[in-house]
Amino acid sequence: MDWLLDQLWQTFIEKDRWRYFANGMAATLEITVLALILGTIIGVLVAVVRSAHDSQRGNKKGLGHALLGVLDGLCKLYLTVIRGTPSTVQLLIMWFILFRWADSSSMLWVASLSFGINSGAYVAEIVRSGIMSIDLGQTEAGRSLGLTYGQTMQFIVIPQAVKNILPALVNELITLLKETSVCGFIGLTDLTKGAMIVQSRTYSPFVPYIAIAVLYLIMVLALTSLLGLLERRLRASDRR
Image (cartoon, rainbow, N blue to C red; front, top):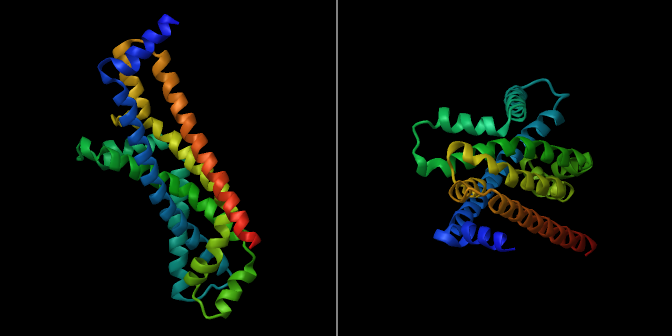
């Protein structure tokens, strides 16, 4: 017991080492939120382009169809490259090659960009599956009312699709949160890197690494609880 108390003292209290965990958690959450926002924007845009191309597959004429085909090809290339390479490798390429001129103050933004681009590829397929789950009659009804394809997607299809894909989106958020633990590869002090720094000072890995495991678990459980609350609210609104 004395050994554990001594380890807790060295890990958190001595020389205010708890700050490494607090600052690391703040960086982890900030990267996750920024990457989620960017990934959602990219994912929705890619999903809409691919769904629009699939819905007009029978129409082979016109400049619009040709342009849509080019965009669909670019989206497929993006999905293939991003989903076919590890997120860690993408982060290394982003920092050491594409942004090699950036200083350490830009590290968090570069990491958010890298994880956002990575997440967008998975969100795109989740959103596209949700769009495909909506009956085609919903789209036809919107177009018959004079709405454009974009307006039909915005006001009719996507709001319904969100309810179907919400669990998958939250799972992607949880995966994204855990994937940010590799940010230390570029020198960014996230939660995992903070624990590694503390371990290097105390020469004891037990408490620092168990601590970050507990912190990650708490964050995941909190997100899961929020999902449950949101799903209950959506079910309640459907009954009205």
